[in-house]
Length: 490
Image 1: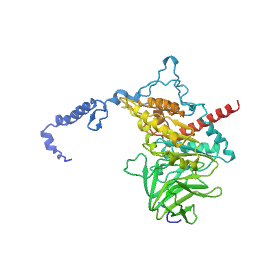
Image 2: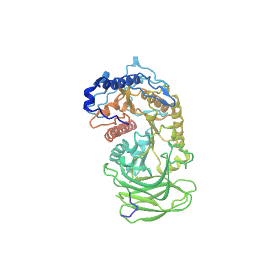
Image 3: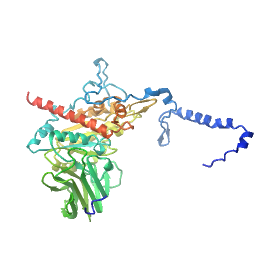
Image 4: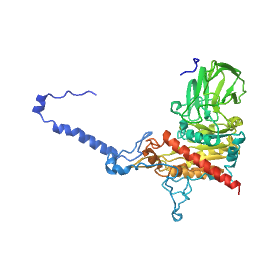
Protein backbone atom coordinates (compact mmCIF):
# COMPACT_ATOMS: atom_id res chain seq x y z
CA UNK A 1 0.00 0.00 0.00
CA UNK A 2 1.39 3.48 -0.81
CA UNK A 3 3.28 5.21 1.93
CA UNK A 4 0.89 8.04 2.58
CA UNK A 5 -1.62 5.60 4.05
CA UNK A 6 -0.26 5.92 7.67
CA UNK A 7 -0.39 6.31 10.47
CA UNK A 8 9.30 13.75 52.68
CA UNK A 9 12.02 13.21 55.07
CA UNK A 10 11.14 10.36 57.41
CA UNK A 11 12.54 9.85 60.92
CA UNK A 12 14.14 6.42 61.52
CA UNK A 13 12.01 3.98 63.45
CA UNK A 14 12.99 3.50 67.12
CA UNK A 15 14.82 0.31 67.99
CA UNK A 16 13.10 -2.46 69.98
CA UNK A 17 15.12 -1.40 73.03
CA UNK A 18 13.83 2.16 72.75
CA UNK A 19 10.26 0.91 72.51
CA UNK A 20 10.73 -1.00 75.73
CA UNK A 21 12.01 2.16 77.47
CA UNK A 22 9.27 4.62 76.31
CA UNK A 23 5.51 4.43 75.66
CA UNK A 24 4.61 5.90 72.22
CA UNK A 25 0.86 5.12 72.25
CA UNK A 26 -0.23 8.66 73.18
CA UNK A 27 1.92 10.15 70.40
CA UNK A 28 0.56 7.64 67.92
CA UNK A 29 -3.04 8.76 68.62
CA UNK A 30 -2.32 12.48 68.23
CA UNK A 31 -1.97 12.42 64.41
CA UNK A 32 -5.35 10.79 63.55
CA UNK A 33 -7.13 12.99 66.09
CA UNK A 34 -5.62 16.13 64.56
CA UNK A 35 -6.47 14.86 61.07
CA UNK A 36 -10.09 14.20 62.05
CA UNK A 37 -10.41 17.68 63.57
CA UNK A 38 -8.94 19.26 60.45
CA UNK A 39 -11.32 17.43 58.07
CA UNK A 40 -14.30 18.24 60.30
CA UNK A 41 -13.35 21.90 60.15
CA UNK A 42 -13.05 21.80 56.36
CA UNK A 43 -16.50 20.22 56.05
CA UNK A 44 -17.99 23.23 57.87
CA UNK A 45 -16.78 25.66 55.18
CA UNK A 46 -19.81 27.03 53.28
CA UNK A 47 -20.41 25.86 49.74
CA UNK A 48 -18.97 28.03 46.93
CA UNK A 49 -16.87 30.18 49.29
CA UNK A 50 -14.73 32.37 47.03
CA UNK A 51 -10.97 32.61 47.55
CA UNK A 52 -9.63 35.02 44.97
CA UNK A 53 -10.74 33.70 41.59
CA UNK A 54 -11.47 30.23 42.93
CA UNK A 55 -14.62 28.77 44.48
CA UNK A 56 -14.22 26.07 47.09
CA UNK A 57 -16.39 23.01 46.70
CA UNK A 58 -18.41 21.71 49.62
CA UNK A 59 -16.76 18.79 51.43
CA UNK A 60 -18.74 16.57 53.78
CA UNK A 61 -16.73 13.69 55.27
CA UNK A 62 -19.80 12.27 57.01
CA UNK A 63 -22.04 12.23 53.90
CA UNK A 64 -21.72 8.53 53.19
CA UNK A 65 -22.24 7.67 56.85
CA UNK A 66 -25.48 9.64 57.02
CA UNK A 67 -26.89 8.73 53.64
CA UNK A 68 -25.84 5.11 53.33
CA UNK A 69 -27.20 3.14 50.44
CA UNK A 70 -30.24 5.40 50.08
CA UNK A 71 -28.18 8.20 48.51
CA UNK A 72 -27.86 6.39 45.17
CA UNK A 73 -30.79 5.47 43.01
CA UNK A 74 -31.39 1.79 42.46
CA UNK A 75 -30.33 0.53 39.03
CA UNK A 76 -32.97 -0.05 36.40
CA UNK A 77 -33.76 -3.63 35.57
CA UNK A 78 -34.66 -2.74 32.01
CA UNK A 79 -34.89 0.28 29.75
CA UNK A 80 -37.06 0.42 26.68
CA UNK A 81 -39.15 2.96 24.82
CA UNK A 82 -42.22 2.00 26.86
CA UNK A 83 -40.59 1.80 30.29
CA UNK A 84 -39.92 5.52 30.86
CA UNK A 85 -41.84 6.93 33.81
CA UNK A 86 -43.65 10.08 32.68
CA UNK A 87 -44.56 12.77 35.18
CA UNK A 88 -48.27 13.54 35.17
CA UNK A 89 -49.13 17.00 36.45
CA UNK A 90 -52.38 17.73 38.24
CA UNK A 91 -53.78 20.93 36.71
CA UNK A 92 -54.52 22.29 40.18
CA UNK A 93 -50.80 22.03 41.00
CA UNK A 94 -49.37 23.55 37.80
CA UNK A 95 -46.86 26.37 38.23
CA UNK A 96 -45.81 28.67 35.43
CA UNK A 97 -42.07 28.32 34.90
CA UNK A 98 -40.28 31.64 34.54
CA UNK A 99 -37.22 31.53 32.32
CA UNK A 100 -35.10 33.39 34.91
CA UNK A 101 -35.97 31.04 37.76
CA UNK A 102 -34.06 28.00 38.88
CA UNK A 103 -35.62 25.26 40.95
CA UNK A 104 -37.69 22.05 40.89
CA UNK A 105 -40.79 23.62 39.32
CA UNK A 106 -43.08 21.12 37.52
CA UNK A 107 -43.54 22.09 33.86
CA UNK A 108 -47.04 22.70 32.56
CA UNK A 109 -48.59 19.81 30.60
CA UNK A 110 -45.61 17.62 31.42
CA UNK A 111 -47.47 14.45 30.47
CA UNK A 112 -46.78 15.35 26.81
CA UNK A 113 -43.17 16.44 27.17
CA UNK A 114 -40.63 14.02 25.74
CA UNK A 115 -43.27 12.05 23.85
CA UNK A 116 -43.76 14.33 20.85
CA UNK A 117 -41.94 16.92 18.80
CA UNK A 118 -43.64 20.18 19.77
CA UNK A 119 -44.40 22.31 16.72
CA UNK A 120 -44.35 26.07 17.29
CA UNK A 121 -44.27 27.04 13.62
CA UNK A 122 -47.06 29.48 12.66
CA UNK A 123 -49.27 26.85 11.01
CA UNK A 124 -47.87 23.82 12.86
CA UNK A 125 -46.37 22.56 9.61
CA UNK A 126 -42.73 22.60 10.71
CA UNK A 127 -42.00 18.99 9.71
CA UNK A 128 -43.87 19.02 6.41
CA UNK A 129 -40.82 19.88 4.30
CA UNK A 130 -38.72 17.24 6.02
CA UNK A 131 -41.21 14.40 5.59
CA UNK A 132 -42.03 15.51 2.04
CA UNK A 133 -38.31 15.11 1.30
CA UNK A 134 -38.19 11.70 3.01
CA UNK A 135 -41.10 10.48 0.91
CA UNK A 136 -39.20 11.62 -2.20
CA UNK A 137 -36.20 9.37 -1.51
CA UNK A 138 -37.84 6.65 -3.58
CA UNK A 139 -37.71 9.05 -6.54
CA UNK A 140 -33.96 9.58 -6.05
CA UNK A 141 -34.01 12.38 -3.45
CA UNK A 142 -31.15 12.82 -0.98
CA UNK A 143 -32.22 14.11 2.46
CA UNK A 144 -29.73 15.78 4.78
CA UNK A 145 -29.97 16.85 8.41
CA UNK A 146 -27.48 19.28 9.98
CA UNK A 147 -27.20 18.41 13.70
CA UNK A 148 -25.39 21.04 15.80
CA UNK A 149 -24.41 19.76 19.24
CA UNK A 150 -21.85 19.64 22.01
CA UNK A 151 -19.94 16.79 23.67
CA UNK A 152 -23.20 14.91 24.28
CA UNK A 153 -23.16 13.71 20.65
CA UNK A 154 -19.47 13.92 19.75
CA UNK A 155 -17.89 10.80 18.32
CA UNK A 156 -21.27 9.97 16.72
CA UNK A 157 -22.65 8.71 20.03
CA UNK A 158 -26.44 8.70 19.63
CA UNK A 159 -26.26 10.03 16.05
CA UNK A 160 -24.45 6.94 14.74
CA UNK A 161 -27.29 4.68 15.84
CA UNK A 162 -29.96 7.16 14.76
CA UNK A 163 -28.39 7.53 11.32
CA UNK A 164 -27.96 3.77 10.88
CA UNK A 165 -31.56 3.02 11.87
CA UNK A 166 -33.05 5.68 9.61
CA UNK A 167 -30.84 4.57 6.70
CA UNK A 168 -32.18 1.04 7.16
CA UNK A 169 -35.73 2.45 6.96
CA UNK A 170 -35.29 5.21 4.39
CA UNK A 171 -32.11 4.37 2.46
CA UNK A 172 -28.61 5.72 2.13
CA UNK A 173 -25.13 4.48 2.93
CA UNK A 174 -22.21 6.41 4.38
CA UNK A 175 -21.62 8.60 7.38
CA UNK A 176 -22.19 11.92 5.59
CA UNK A 177 -20.15 14.96 6.64
CA UNK A 178 -16.88 14.23 8.47
CA UNK A 179 -14.28 16.67 9.86
CA UNK A 180 -10.66 16.89 8.73
CA UNK A 181 -9.29 16.38 12.27
CA UNK A 182 -11.02 15.07 15.37
CA UNK A 183 -10.40 14.93 19.14
CA UNK A 184 -12.32 11.64 19.30
CA UNK A 185 -11.10 9.85 16.17
CA UNK A 186 -10.15 6.73 18.16
CA UNK A 187 -13.53 6.81 19.88
CA UNK A 188 -15.75 6.62 16.80
CA UNK A 189 -17.49 3.47 15.63
CA UNK A 190 -18.69 4.96 12.35
CA UNK A 191 -15.33 5.62 10.71
CA UNK A 192 -11.60 4.94 10.85
CA UNK A 193 -10.04 8.38 10.66
CA UNK A 194 -6.31 9.14 10.42
CA UNK A 195 -4.82 12.60 9.84
CA UNK A 196 -1.49 14.42 10.07
CA UNK A 197 -0.13 17.91 9.47
CA UNK A 198 -3.17 20.11 10.15
CA UNK A 199 -3.79 23.27 12.17
CA UNK A 200 -7.36 23.25 13.50
CA UNK A 201 -9.34 26.41 14.23
CA UNK A 202 -12.57 26.17 16.24
CA UNK A 203 -15.36 28.54 17.26
CA UNK A 204 -14.78 27.64 20.94
CA UNK A 205 -11.02 28.27 20.97
CA UNK A 206 -9.91 31.81 21.71
CA UNK A 207 -7.35 33.09 19.22
CA UNK A 208 -6.25 36.47 17.93
CA UNK A 209 -6.92 35.66 14.30
CA UNK A 210 -8.37 32.80 12.33
CA UNK A 211 -9.70 32.02 8.85
CA UNK A 212 -13.45 32.06 8.33
CA UNK A 213 -15.16 29.08 9.91
CA UNK A 214 -17.00 26.45 7.94
CA UNK A 215 -20.51 25.18 8.45
CA UNK A 216 -19.44 22.82 11.27
CA UNK A 217 -17.67 25.55 13.27
CA UNK A 218 -14.17 24.52 12.20
CA UNK A 219 -11.62 25.34 9.53
CA UNK A 220 -8.43 23.36 8.82
CA UNK A 221 -5.11 24.62 7.44
CA UNK A 222 -2.67 22.06 5.99
CA UNK A 223 1.10 22.08 6.38
CA UNK A 224 3.33 20.65 3.68
CA UNK A 225 2.50 16.99 3.02
CA UNK A 226 -0.63 17.05 5.22
CA UNK A 227 -2.74 13.89 4.92
CA UNK A 228 -6.25 12.61 5.67
CA UNK A 229 -7.36 8.98 5.52
CA UNK A 230 -11.01 7.92 5.84
CA UNK A 231 -11.89 4.24 6.03
CA UNK A 232 -15.23 2.54 6.47
CA UNK A 233 -16.07 0.76 9.71
CA UNK A 234 -18.20 -2.36 10.03
CA UNK A 235 -19.82 -1.71 13.43
CA UNK A 236 -22.88 -0.20 11.72
CA UNK A 237 -24.66 -1.64 8.72
CA UNK A 238 -24.28 1.37 6.45
CA UNK A 239 -20.81 2.80 7.04
CA UNK A 240 -18.52 0.36 5.22
CA UNK A 241 -18.84 1.71 1.66
CA UNK A 242 -19.60 4.91 -0.17
CA UNK A 243 -19.47 5.85 -3.85
CA UNK A 244 -19.54 9.65 -3.63
CA UNK A 245 -16.67 11.49 -1.95
CA UNK A 246 -16.40 15.27 -1.64
CA UNK A 247 -14.24 17.65 0.30
CA UNK A 248 -14.98 21.34 0.75
CA UNK A 249 -12.18 23.87 0.33
CA UNK A 250 -11.10 27.37 -0.62
CA UNK A 251 -7.91 28.08 -2.56
CA UNK A 252 -6.16 31.31 -3.46
CA UNK A 253 -4.71 29.74 -6.59
CA UNK A 254 -4.65 26.43 -8.40
CA UNK A 255 -3.20 23.86 -5.99
CA UNK A 256 -2.02 20.31 -6.79
CA UNK A 257 -2.89 17.43 -4.48
CA UNK A 258 -2.84 13.62 -4.49
CA UNK A 259 -5.82 11.38 -3.93
CA UNK A 260 -6.29 7.63 -3.66
CA UNK A 261 -9.25 5.36 -3.21
CA UNK A 262 -8.93 1.95 -1.55
CA UNK A 263 -5.94 -0.04 -2.89
CA UNK A 264 -5.62 1.66 -6.26
CA UNK A 265 -2.62 3.74 -7.26
CA UNK A 266 -2.44 7.39 -6.17
CA UNK A 267 -3.63 9.95 -8.69
CA UNK A 268 -2.87 13.63 -9.11
CA UNK A 269 -5.47 16.36 -9.03
CA UNK A 270 -5.63 20.14 -8.97
CA UNK A 271 -7.87 22.37 -6.88
CA UNK A 272 -9.22 25.34 -8.78
CA UNK A 273 -8.91 28.88 -7.46
CA UNK A 274 -12.09 29.81 -5.60
CA UNK A 275 -11.87 33.63 -5.32
CA UNK A 276 -12.73 33.55 -1.65
CA UNK A 277 -15.70 31.24 -2.11
CA UNK A 278 -16.10 27.66 -0.90
CA UNK A 279 -16.16 24.92 -3.48
CA UNK A 280 -16.25 21.13 -3.49
CA UNK A 281 -13.96 18.61 -5.16
CA UNK A 282 -15.88 15.44 -5.99
CA UNK A 283 -15.22 11.81 -6.87
CA UNK A 284 -17.97 9.40 -7.90
CA UNK A 285 -17.88 5.66 -8.66
CA UNK A 286 -20.36 2.92 -9.41
CA UNK A 287 -21.94 0.92 -6.58
CA UNK A 288 -20.65 -0.25 -4.12
CA UNK A 289 -17.87 2.33 -4.46
CA UNK A 290 -14.93 2.31 -2.06
CA UNK A 291 -14.11 1.41 1.53
CA UNK A 292 -11.25 3.91 1.93
CA UNK A 293 -10.24 7.29 0.58
CA UNK A 294 -7.21 9.47 1.27
CA UNK A 295 -5.91 12.85 0.15
CA UNK A 296 -2.45 14.46 0.51
CA UNK A 297 -1.31 18.04 -0.05
CA UNK A 298 2.42 18.26 -0.96
CA UNK A 299 2.53 22.09 -1.21
CA UNK A 300 -0.77 23.50 0.07
CA UNK A 301 -0.04 27.24 0.09
CA UNK A 302 -3.25 29.26 0.32
CA UNK A 303 -5.54 26.24 0.80
CA UNK A 304 -8.12 25.78 3.57
CA UNK A 305 -10.27 22.68 4.07
CA UNK A 306 -13.66 22.57 5.76
CA UNK A 307 -14.50 18.86 5.87
CA UNK A 308 -15.54 16.00 3.62
CA UNK A 309 -18.66 13.98 2.85
CA UNK A 310 -18.96 10.21 2.35
CA UNK A 311 -22.27 9.18 0.79
CA UNK A 312 -24.07 6.69 -1.40
CA UNK A 313 -27.40 8.30 -2.21
CA UNK A 314 -30.33 8.44 -2.47
CA UNK A 315 -31.21 8.22 1.22
CA UNK A 316 -30.86 10.13 4.45
CA UNK A 317 -27.67 11.55 5.97
CA UNK A 318 -27.25 13.15 9.39
CA UNK A 319 -24.24 15.45 9.49
CA UNK A 320 -22.75 15.62 12.98
CA UNK A 321 -21.59 19.20 13.70
CA UNK A 322 -20.66 18.63 17.35
CA UNK A 323 -18.21 21.02 19.03
CA UNK A 324 -17.00 20.15 22.52
CA UNK A 325 -17.71 23.03 24.92
CA UNK A 326 -20.26 24.67 22.60
CA UNK A 327 -23.01 26.40 24.61
CA UNK A 328 -24.70 27.64 21.44
CA UNK A 329 -23.43 31.22 21.47
CA UNK A 330 -20.23 30.53 19.47
CA UNK A 331 -22.32 29.42 16.50
CA UNK A 332 -22.81 33.10 15.72
CA UNK A 333 -19.21 33.06 14.46
CA UNK A 334 -20.38 31.07 11.42
CA UNK A 335 -21.29 33.69 8.83
CA UNK A 336 -24.70 33.28 7.16
CA UNK A 337 -23.10 33.73 3.73
CA UNK A 338 -20.68 30.87 4.45
CA UNK A 339 -23.47 28.60 5.70
CA UNK A 340 -25.45 29.29 2.55
CA UNK A 341 -22.44 28.51 0.35
CA UNK A 342 -22.32 25.06 1.94
CA UNK A 343 -26.07 24.70 1.69
CA UNK A 344 -25.95 25.15 -2.05
CA UNK A 345 -24.17 21.79 -2.09
CA UNK A 346 -25.90 20.11 0.83
CA UNK A 347 -29.49 21.45 0.60
CA UNK A 348 -30.38 20.64 4.20
CA UNK A 349 -33.98 19.63 4.91
CA UNK A 350 -33.78 19.93 8.71
CA UNK A 351 -31.53 21.86 11.10
CA UNK A 352 -31.16 20.54 14.66
CA UNK A 353 -29.62 22.41 17.59
CA UNK A 354 -28.83 20.48 20.78
CA UNK A 355 -26.89 22.51 23.35
CA UNK A 356 -27.09 23.55 27.02
CA UNK A 357 -24.95 20.92 28.71
CA UNK A 358 -22.14 23.40 29.32
CA UNK A 359 -24.48 25.92 30.98
CA UNK A 360 -25.90 23.47 33.55
CA UNK A 361 -24.57 23.98 37.09
CA UNK A 362 -25.87 23.85 40.66
CA UNK A 363 -24.70 27.38 41.47
CA UNK A 364 -26.64 29.03 38.63
CA UNK A 365 -29.25 31.36 40.14
CA UNK A 366 -30.28 33.30 37.04
CA UNK A 367 -30.32 32.15 33.43
CA UNK A 368 -31.28 35.42 31.77
CA UNK A 369 -27.76 35.76 30.37
CA UNK A 370 -28.02 32.34 28.73
CA UNK A 371 -31.51 33.06 27.48
CA UNK A 372 -30.23 36.23 25.80
CA UNK A 373 -27.33 34.31 24.25
CA UNK A 374 -29.55 31.56 22.83
CA UNK A 375 -32.09 34.13 21.63
CA UNK A 376 -29.39 35.69 19.46
CA UNK A 377 -28.19 32.25 18.33
CA UNK A 378 -31.70 31.22 17.28
CA UNK A 379 -32.03 34.39 15.20
CA UNK A 380 -28.61 33.70 13.68
CA UNK A 381 -29.61 30.15 12.69
CA UNK A 382 -32.67 31.53 10.94
CA UNK A 383 -30.39 33.87 8.98
CA UNK A 384 -28.01 31.02 8.10
CA UNK A 385 -30.80 28.68 6.98
CA UNK A 386 -33.77 30.80 5.89
CA UNK A 387 -37.05 28.99 5.36
CA UNK A 388 -35.68 25.72 6.75
CA UNK A 389 -37.32 23.86 9.64
CA UNK A 390 -35.24 24.18 12.81
CA UNK A 391 -35.61 21.66 15.65
CA UNK A 392 -34.39 22.58 19.13
CA UNK A 393 -33.48 19.54 21.24
CA UNK A 394 -33.35 20.56 24.88
CA UNK A 395 -30.55 19.82 27.29
CA UNK A 396 -30.79 16.32 28.73
CA UNK A 397 -30.63 15.27 32.35
CA UNK A 398 -27.42 15.96 34.26
CA UNK A 399 -26.74 15.06 37.90
CA UNK A 400 -24.20 15.35 40.67
CA UNK A 401 -24.05 15.04 44.44
CA UNK A 402 -25.94 17.87 46.12
CA UNK A 403 -25.12 17.68 49.81
CA UNK A 404 -25.57 14.01 50.61
CA UNK A 405 -27.86 13.15 47.69
CA UNK A 406 -27.14 12.33 44.07
CA UNK A 407 -29.78 14.06 41.97
CA UNK A 408 -30.53 16.17 38.91
CA UNK A 409 -28.76 19.54 38.84
CA UNK A 410 -31.17 22.29 39.84
CA UNK A 411 -30.75 24.38 36.67
CA UNK A 412 -31.72 21.59 34.24
CA UNK A 413 -35.54 22.03 34.27
CA UNK A 414 -35.27 25.82 34.13
CA UNK A 415 -32.97 25.72 31.07
CA UNK A 416 -35.32 23.25 29.37
CA UNK A 417 -38.28 25.58 30.00
CA UNK A 418 -36.30 28.54 28.70
CA UNK A 419 -35.31 26.66 25.53
CA UNK A 420 -38.96 25.76 24.96
CA UNK A 421 -40.01 29.41 25.38
CA UNK A 422 -37.41 30.52 22.83
CA UNK A 423 -38.46 27.83 20.36
CA UNK A 424 -42.03 29.12 20.67
CA UNK A 425 -40.87 32.73 20.16
CA UNK A 426 -38.91 31.90 16.99
CA UNK A 427 -41.48 29.49 15.52
CA UNK A 428 -39.19 26.47 15.79
CA UNK A 429 -39.80 22.82 16.55
CA UNK A 430 -38.88 21.61 20.04
CA UNK A 431 -38.13 18.27 21.65
CA UNK A 432 -37.82 17.84 25.43
CA UNK A 433 -34.87 15.47 25.78
CA UNK A 434 -34.91 15.88 29.57
CA UNK A 435 -38.30 14.21 29.81
CA UNK A 436 -37.53 12.01 26.81
CA UNK A 437 -34.76 10.44 28.89
CA UNK A 438 -37.19 9.94 31.76
CA UNK A 439 -37.15 13.24 33.66
CA UNK A 440 -35.54 13.90 37.05
CA UNK A 441 -32.85 11.37 37.96
CA UNK A 442 -32.94 9.58 34.62
CA UNK A 443 -29.21 10.03 33.97
CA UNK A 444 -28.56 8.35 37.35
CA UNK A 445 -30.72 5.40 36.32
CA UNK A 446 -28.86 5.21 33.01
CA UNK A 447 -25.48 5.22 34.78
CA UNK A 448 -26.65 2.39 37.05
CA UNK A 449 -28.12 0.32 34.22
CA UNK A 450 -26.40 -2.91 33.15
CA UNK A 451 -24.89 -2.42 30.63
CA UNK A 452 -24.10 1.14 31.65
CA UNK A 453 -26.00 3.69 29.55
CA UNK A 454 -24.26 6.78 30.97
CA UNK A 455 -20.82 7.49 32.36
CA UNK A 456 -20.30 8.08 36.06
CA UNK A 457 -19.89 11.80 35.42
CA UNK A 458 -23.71 11.67 35.17
CA UNK A 459 -23.47 13.84 32.07
CA UNK A 460 -22.36 11.88 28.99
CA UNK A 461 -23.65 8.73 27.32
CA UNK A 462 -21.77 5.51 26.78
CA UNK A 463 -21.97 3.79 23.40
CA UNK A 464 -24.74 1.57 24.80
CA UNK A 465 -26.59 4.67 25.99
CA UNK A 466 -26.13 6.24 22.58
CA UNK A 467 -27.72 3.19 20.99
CA UNK A 468 -30.66 3.38 23.39
CA UNK A 469 -31.31 7.09 22.76
CA UNK A 470 -30.55 6.70 19.04
CA UNK A 471 -33.36 4.14 18.75
CA UNK A 472 -35.54 6.44 20.84
CA UNK A 473 -35.06 9.31 18.37
CA UNK A 474 -35.61 6.96 15.41
CA UNK A 475 -38.93 5.86 16.91
CA UNK A 476 -39.83 9.49 17.55
CA UNK A 477 -39.21 10.44 13.91
CA UNK A 478 -41.12 7.47 12.49
CA UNK A 479 -44.08 8.12 14.80
CA UNK A 480 -44.13 11.77 13.72
CA UNK A 481 -43.97 10.59 10.10
CA UNK A 482 -46.98 8.33 10.65
CA UNK A 483 -48.97 11.24 12.13
CA UNK A 484 -47.95 13.44 9.20
CA UNK A 485 -49.11 10.85 6.68
CA UNK A 486 -52.40 10.34 8.52
CA UNK A 487 -53.07 14.09 8.50
CA UNK A 488 -52.51 14.20 4.73
CA UNK A 489 -55.27 11.65 4.11
CA UNK A 490 -57.88 13.49 6.16
